[in-house]
Amino acid sequence: MSEYNARTGVKRLRVRGLKAVRFCAMLKAIGINIFRATAVRKAVIALMGTPERVTPSLRHVILVFKEQTETTWGQFKNILTSFALGSQFDLKTAA
Image (tube, rainbow, N blue to C red; front, side, top):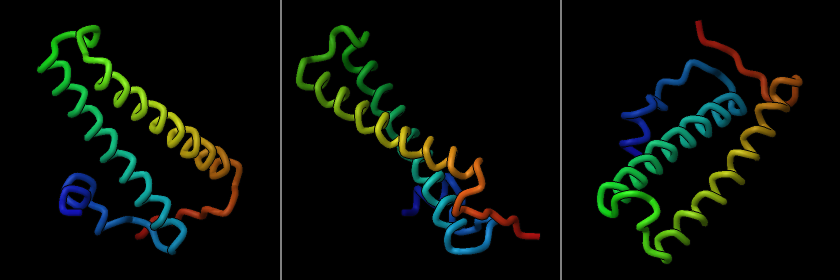
């Protein structure tokens, strides 16, 4: 949670309302997951060299993570699409 706050500033959101706060917090959590996935990929490449030399078990873990990320991204895209069409999310900026 401290990394979540330090990297994204989630404790000081510029929106009001439970739905808007939930939406913004989810976006920030997705951002943290992207940072972490990038760090893991850089570490794997640093240890193993190019991705072609990755062991089959590690390749499986990476593929499962990729599938989960794509699923999450698809859900996120649906939320953004529904937000753009004026659905249930109503973001309001704080003055």
